[in-house]
Image (tube, rainbow, N blue to C red; front, side, top):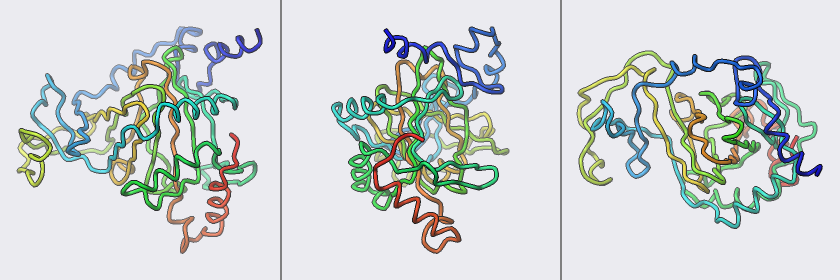
Length: 301
Protein backbone atom coordinates (compact mmCIF):
# COMPACT_ATOMS: atom_id res chain seq x y z
CA UNK A 1 0.00 0.00 0.00
CA UNK A 2 2.82 2.41 0.86
CA UNK A 3 4.52 1.75 -2.47
CA UNK A 4 1.28 2.33 -4.35
CA UNK A 5 0.77 5.62 -2.51
CA UNK A 6 4.30 6.70 -3.41
CA UNK A 7 3.67 5.86 -7.05
CA UNK A 8 0.74 8.31 -7.29
CA UNK A 9 1.98 10.99 -4.90
CA UNK A 10 3.94 12.76 -7.63
CA UNK A 11 0.65 13.23 -9.53
CA UNK A 12 -0.76 15.17 -6.57
CA UNK A 13 2.19 17.39 -5.67
CA UNK A 14 3.66 20.35 -7.52
CA UNK A 15 7.09 22.01 -7.57
CA UNK A 16 6.13 25.12 -9.56
CA UNK A 17 7.26 28.60 -8.52
CA UNK A 18 6.50 32.09 -9.79
CA UNK A 19 4.66 32.20 -13.12
CA UNK A 20 5.41 28.59 -14.02
CA UNK A 21 2.54 26.14 -13.72
CA UNK A 22 1.58 22.52 -14.30
CA UNK A 23 -1.75 20.73 -14.51
CA UNK A 24 -1.66 19.95 -10.79
CA UNK A 25 -1.37 23.53 -9.51
CA UNK A 26 -3.68 24.82 -12.24
CA UNK A 27 -6.41 22.47 -11.05
CA UNK A 28 -5.78 23.26 -7.40
CA UNK A 29 -5.77 27.03 -7.79
CA UNK A 30 -7.77 27.38 -11.03
CA UNK A 31 -4.93 29.41 -12.49
CA UNK A 32 -5.42 30.72 -16.00
CA UNK A 33 -2.77 29.84 -18.60
CA UNK A 34 -4.45 31.61 -21.53
CA UNK A 35 -1.60 34.14 -21.52
CA UNK A 36 0.71 31.44 -22.88
CA UNK A 37 -1.33 31.06 -26.07
CA UNK A 38 0.04 34.37 -27.32
CA UNK A 39 3.58 33.01 -26.91
CA UNK A 40 3.12 30.38 -29.62
CA UNK A 41 5.16 31.21 -32.70
CA UNK A 42 3.38 32.02 -35.96
CA UNK A 43 6.05 30.77 -38.37
CA UNK A 44 6.64 27.04 -37.96
CA UNK A 45 9.51 25.16 -39.56
CA UNK A 46 10.49 21.50 -39.26
CA UNK A 47 14.11 20.44 -38.91
CA UNK A 48 15.18 17.89 -41.52
CA UNK A 49 18.06 15.73 -40.18
CA UNK A 50 18.87 14.44 -43.67
CA UNK A 51 19.64 17.92 -45.02
CA UNK A 52 20.34 20.07 -41.96
CA UNK A 53 17.73 22.58 -43.14
CA UNK A 54 14.63 23.95 -41.44
CA UNK A 55 11.70 23.47 -43.81
CA UNK A 56 8.44 25.38 -43.81
CA UNK A 57 5.68 23.25 -42.33
CA UNK A 58 3.39 21.56 -44.83
CA UNK A 59 0.17 23.48 -45.32
CA UNK A 60 1.60 26.65 -43.73
CA UNK A 61 2.36 29.98 -45.38
CA UNK A 62 6.00 28.92 -45.42
CA UNK A 63 5.63 25.60 -47.22
CA UNK A 64 8.31 25.49 -49.91
CA UNK A 65 10.60 27.85 -47.99
CA UNK A 66 13.63 26.87 -45.93
CA UNK A 67 16.85 28.03 -44.33
CA UNK A 68 20.05 26.25 -43.24
CA UNK A 69 19.95 25.17 -39.60
CA UNK A 70 23.42 24.04 -38.45
CA UNK A 71 24.43 22.80 -35.02
CA UNK A 72 22.02 19.86 -34.68
CA UNK A 73 23.01 16.18 -34.69
CA UNK A 74 20.40 13.47 -34.23
CA UNK A 75 21.54 9.87 -33.70
CA UNK A 76 18.64 7.44 -33.80
CA UNK A 77 18.53 4.13 -31.88
CA UNK A 78 21.47 5.20 -29.74
CA UNK A 79 20.49 2.64 -27.10
CA UNK A 80 18.63 -0.63 -27.43
CA UNK A 81 15.16 -1.23 -25.93
CA UNK A 82 16.78 -3.44 -23.29
CA UNK A 83 19.31 -0.75 -22.35
CA UNK A 84 16.56 1.85 -22.20
CA UNK A 85 14.45 -0.28 -19.85
CA UNK A 86 17.41 -0.96 -17.56
CA UNK A 87 18.46 2.70 -17.41
CA UNK A 88 14.97 3.86 -16.46
CA UNK A 89 14.62 1.04 -13.92
CA UNK A 90 17.83 2.15 -12.21
CA UNK A 91 16.77 5.80 -12.30
CA UNK A 92 13.50 4.89 -10.62
CA UNK A 93 15.40 3.15 -7.82
CA UNK A 94 16.53 6.61 -6.67
CA UNK A 95 14.19 9.39 -5.56
CA UNK A 96 12.96 12.00 -8.04
CA UNK A 97 12.70 15.61 -6.84
CA UNK A 98 9.75 17.78 -7.79
CA UNK A 99 10.72 20.50 -10.25
CA UNK A 100 9.14 23.35 -12.21
CA UNK A 101 6.35 23.02 -14.78
CA UNK A 102 5.35 19.49 -13.85
CA UNK A 103 8.77 17.93 -14.20
CA UNK A 104 10.71 15.72 -11.80
CA UNK A 105 14.51 15.68 -11.75
CA UNK A 106 17.65 13.90 -10.65
CA UNK A 107 20.95 15.82 -10.66
CA UNK A 108 24.41 14.28 -10.84
CA UNK A 109 26.73 17.27 -10.65
CA UNK A 110 28.21 19.98 -8.44
CA UNK A 111 26.04 22.48 -6.57
CA UNK A 112 26.08 25.62 -8.70
CA UNK A 113 25.01 29.23 -8.22
CA UNK A 114 25.05 30.48 -11.80
CA UNK A 115 24.16 34.06 -10.89
CA UNK A 116 27.17 34.39 -8.56
CA UNK A 117 29.30 32.00 -10.64
CA UNK A 118 30.13 29.81 -7.68
CA UNK A 119 30.07 26.03 -7.26
CA UNK A 120 30.71 23.41 -4.62
CA UNK A 121 31.95 19.85 -5.00
CA UNK A 122 30.26 18.78 -1.75
CA UNK A 123 28.17 15.65 -2.24
CA UNK A 124 29.16 15.19 -5.90
CA UNK A 125 30.52 11.68 -6.39
CA UNK A 126 30.24 11.39 -10.13
CA UNK A 127 27.87 10.33 -12.87
CA UNK A 128 25.80 7.18 -12.25
CA UNK A 129 27.37 3.84 -13.04
CA UNK A 130 24.67 2.94 -15.57
CA UNK A 131 25.77 5.87 -17.78
CA UNK A 132 29.36 4.66 -18.24
CA UNK A 133 28.63 2.57 -21.35
CA UNK A 134 26.48 5.35 -22.79
CA UNK A 135 29.27 7.91 -22.41
CA UNK A 136 31.82 5.52 -23.91
CA UNK A 137 29.53 4.94 -26.88
CA UNK A 138 29.23 8.69 -27.49
CA UNK A 139 32.94 8.80 -28.26
CA UNK A 140 32.42 6.52 -31.26
CA UNK A 141 30.47 9.20 -33.14
CA UNK A 142 31.92 12.12 -35.14
CA UNK A 143 31.89 15.32 -33.15
CA UNK A 144 31.76 13.51 -29.80
CA UNK A 145 35.13 11.76 -29.81
CA UNK A 146 36.49 13.97 -27.00
CA UNK A 147 33.21 14.58 -25.18
CA UNK A 148 33.71 14.28 -21.41
CA UNK A 149 30.55 15.07 -19.47
CA UNK A 150 30.87 16.49 -15.98
CA UNK A 151 27.16 16.66 -15.20
CA UNK A 152 24.06 14.57 -15.90
CA UNK A 153 20.54 15.83 -15.31
CA UNK A 154 17.63 13.42 -15.63
CA UNK A 155 14.21 14.97 -16.24
CA UNK A 156 10.94 13.08 -15.99
CA UNK A 157 7.96 14.36 -18.02
CA UNK A 158 4.37 13.19 -17.65
CA UNK A 159 1.18 14.18 -19.52
CA UNK A 160 -0.75 13.68 -16.28
CA UNK A 161 1.29 16.46 -14.67
CA UNK A 162 1.25 18.65 -17.77
CA UNK A 163 5.05 18.60 -17.90
CA UNK A 164 6.92 21.08 -20.05
CA UNK A 165 10.04 23.26 -20.02
CA UNK A 166 10.09 26.91 -21.04
CA UNK A 167 12.35 28.28 -23.81
CA UNK A 168 15.82 28.79 -22.37
CA UNK A 169 19.55 28.83 -23.09
CA UNK A 170 21.80 26.64 -20.97
CA UNK A 171 24.52 28.40 -19.00
CA UNK A 172 27.79 29.04 -20.86
CA UNK A 173 29.99 30.01 -17.89
CA UNK A 174 30.32 26.45 -16.56
CA UNK A 175 28.89 24.31 -19.37
CA UNK A 176 30.76 23.95 -22.64
CA UNK A 177 30.02 23.82 -26.34
CA UNK A 178 27.98 20.61 -26.62
CA UNK A 179 24.65 19.75 -25.02
CA UNK A 180 23.91 16.04 -25.36
CA UNK A 181 20.49 14.59 -24.49
CA UNK A 182 19.32 10.99 -24.52
CA UNK A 183 15.56 10.70 -25.09
CA UNK A 184 13.90 7.71 -23.40
CA UNK A 185 10.44 6.07 -23.21
CA UNK A 186 8.63 8.23 -25.78
CA UNK A 187 9.22 10.49 -28.76
CA UNK A 188 8.93 14.24 -28.37
CA UNK A 189 9.57 17.54 -30.12
CA UNK A 190 12.24 20.06 -29.12
CA UNK A 191 11.08 23.55 -30.10
CA UNK A 192 13.79 26.08 -30.99
CA UNK A 193 13.22 29.84 -31.09
CA UNK A 194 15.10 33.13 -31.28
CA UNK A 195 14.79 36.20 -29.10
CA UNK A 196 17.01 38.31 -31.35
CA UNK A 197 15.57 41.26 -33.28
CA UNK A 198 15.75 41.48 -37.04
CA UNK A 199 14.68 39.19 -39.84
CA UNK A 200 15.59 35.66 -40.87
CA UNK A 201 16.27 35.19 -44.57
CA UNK A 202 14.53 32.31 -46.32
CA UNK A 203 15.34 30.49 -49.55
CA UNK A 204 13.14 28.55 -51.87
CA UNK A 205 13.49 24.95 -50.73
CA UNK A 206 15.23 22.77 -53.37
CA UNK A 207 13.11 19.96 -54.74
CA UNK A 208 14.21 16.34 -54.61
CA UNK A 209 16.01 14.34 -51.95
CA UNK A 210 18.84 15.27 -49.59
CA UNK A 211 21.38 15.39 -52.43
CA UNK A 212 19.48 18.30 -53.94
CA UNK A 213 20.56 20.47 -50.99
CA UNK A 214 24.28 20.02 -51.60
CA UNK A 215 25.63 23.32 -52.90
CA UNK A 216 22.12 24.48 -53.73
CA UNK A 217 21.95 27.59 -51.55
CA UNK A 218 20.17 30.22 -53.61
CA UNK A 219 19.78 33.93 -53.01
CA UNK A 220 17.29 34.62 -50.22
CA UNK A 221 14.02 35.93 -51.59
CA UNK A 222 11.86 36.17 -48.48
CA UNK A 223 12.32 37.15 -44.85
CA UNK A 224 10.45 36.61 -41.60
CA UNK A 225 10.85 38.28 -38.18
CA UNK A 226 13.26 36.18 -36.08
CA UNK A 227 11.06 36.33 -33.00
CA UNK A 228 8.12 34.75 -34.84
CA UNK A 229 10.05 31.65 -35.97
CA UNK A 230 9.98 28.27 -34.27
CA UNK A 231 11.91 25.25 -35.50
CA UNK A 232 10.55 21.87 -34.41
CA UNK A 233 13.08 19.06 -34.01
CA UNK A 234 11.37 15.66 -33.88
CA UNK A 235 13.29 13.49 -31.42
CA UNK A 236 12.50 9.76 -31.63
CA UNK A 237 12.51 7.43 -28.66
CA UNK A 238 15.99 6.14 -27.71
CA UNK A 239 17.74 8.79 -29.83
CA UNK A 240 20.61 11.13 -28.94
CA UNK A 241 20.31 14.86 -29.67
CA UNK A 242 23.43 17.06 -29.79
CA UNK A 243 23.22 20.87 -29.91
CA UNK A 244 26.29 22.97 -30.76
CA UNK A 245 27.10 26.38 -32.22
CA UNK A 246 24.13 28.65 -32.89
CA UNK A 247 21.67 25.90 -31.91
CA UNK A 248 23.36 25.80 -28.51
CA UNK A 249 24.12 29.48 -27.88
CA UNK A 250 21.58 31.55 -29.86
CA UNK A 251 18.42 29.48 -30.27
CA UNK A 252 16.50 28.73 -27.07
CA UNK A 253 15.12 25.21 -26.68
CA UNK A 254 11.85 24.14 -25.08
CA UNK A 255 9.47 21.20 -24.69
CA UNK A 256 5.82 22.22 -25.03
CA UNK A 257 3.17 20.49 -22.97
CA UNK A 258 1.33 19.38 -26.10
CA UNK A 259 4.37 17.36 -27.18
CA UNK A 260 4.37 15.13 -24.08
CA UNK A 261 2.05 12.26 -25.04
CA UNK A 262 3.38 9.64 -22.60
CA UNK A 263 6.02 9.39 -19.89
CA UNK A 264 9.33 10.75 -21.16
CA UNK A 265 12.70 10.59 -19.44
CA UNK A 266 15.56 12.72 -20.73
CA UNK A 267 19.17 12.40 -19.60
CA UNK A 268 21.16 15.53 -20.51
CA UNK A 269 24.95 15.46 -20.35
CA UNK A 270 27.02 18.65 -20.12
CA UNK A 271 30.74 19.23 -20.54
CA UNK A 272 32.96 21.93 -19.04
CA UNK A 273 33.57 25.33 -20.61
CA UNK A 274 37.09 26.44 -21.57
CA UNK A 275 37.47 28.28 -18.25
CA UNK A 276 37.60 24.90 -16.49
CA UNK A 277 39.73 23.06 -19.04
CA UNK A 278 43.56 22.92 -19.26
CA UNK A 279 44.83 26.47 -19.79
CA UNK A 280 41.73 28.03 -18.24
CA UNK A 281 41.83 30.06 -15.02
CA UNK A 282 39.90 27.36 -13.15
CA UNK A 283 41.61 24.35 -14.66
CA UNK A 284 42.40 22.76 -11.26
CA UNK A 285 38.75 22.78 -10.26
CA UNK A 286 37.83 21.46 -13.68
CA UNK A 287 40.29 18.59 -13.27
CA UNK A 288 38.75 17.65 -9.93
CA UNK A 289 35.23 17.82 -11.35
CA UNK A 290 36.11 15.59 -14.28
CA UNK A 291 37.91 13.10 -12.06
CA UNK A 292 34.85 12.80 -9.87
CA UNK A 293 32.36 12.74 -12.76
CA UNK A 294 34.12 10.01 -14.71
CA UNK A 295 34.47 7.73 -11.70
CA UNK A 296 30.80 6.80 -12.38
CA UNK A 297 30.11 6.26 -8.69
CA UNK A 298 27.50 8.97 -8.26
CA UNK A 299 24.07 9.20 -6.70
CA UNK A 300 21.60 12.06 -7.24
CA UNK A 301 22.57 15.16 -5.25
